[in-house]
Length: 423
Image (cartoon, rainbow, N blue to C red; front, top):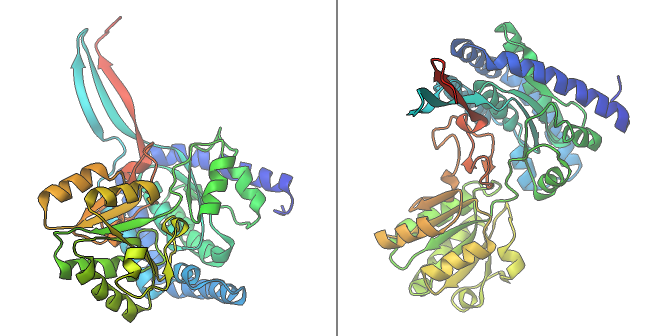
């Protein structure tokens, strides 16, 4: 059946969701050993077939260059040997993690002769709508499967060849392990109608997780009749406090901006305490110059160093995903926190300080999913947190907040045990 046409797309998506619902029930009752063995087989398949993946990825890269896609998107799209190794390592780490399904989270006795417990269970069917990064295909599939869920993937058109190649390997490995391969499915069309159809399958799909640009996520939020876990953008800050170790501050600010600027946890705005600005700003400007970082500065910043542009409120609200950094001189920690409250996105924010009281206040008052003390914002990552990998970073507080690993892809149900207890 062709995907062309809204009606046909809806019918095809419906069938995928129906298969996923059946597979979800089967995966939910798999023994932990079976899931581990299947994931190890997936990892080995990706490792041994890397040349096939890179060949498919080259098709996407060639198409991206022909369409004049920007450097940030092309960076997210590319599958290097190092990134394939990271995919494999992430899947193996997920395989080795404790199985959350069936974990008794808490348990207590109640008057009347009954016991109440809370037990982890899978979410069910998870729809993941994403752009650019092919590694999301592997990470999301492995995390979801480990947590006992079925996954429906809909990647962006720019990575279609890479995504299809990865999903094919995953499904073959699951089938070879005696597992329903419909636990991982991909909507193969790049037609927009297919996304709209998926977002309306609330009787079959339990949650939607979008990953991508603000436009994609806004569309998902506006159209979905299914609960959505999301983050719109990563407007991340590093605040250099008056009591900061200057060399440490320089290293953290540079790492947060230039280590991989195309990611959502890279720094977009550097806040500098006015008491140290005259000494610190020339040093960070020199470091940024080495890496080609453009500086958009406030008026106080422009009075101390050369800037490429004067920073505006719109700039402070922008996720650049590139080598541009806002710099603002602030009067102290309260002004820094106020700036983050005004312009931040509840993603990741950091303070560099040797003051315990300042660090304590910052971590208490900054309402972000990850708050760093003397650490780069680039550390906000599920794999680095020990989650194996992440399916995304949620800036919602329901149902998860921050990097989402295996446990965040489960929920909890009550189990009550008794010997004939009555009300």
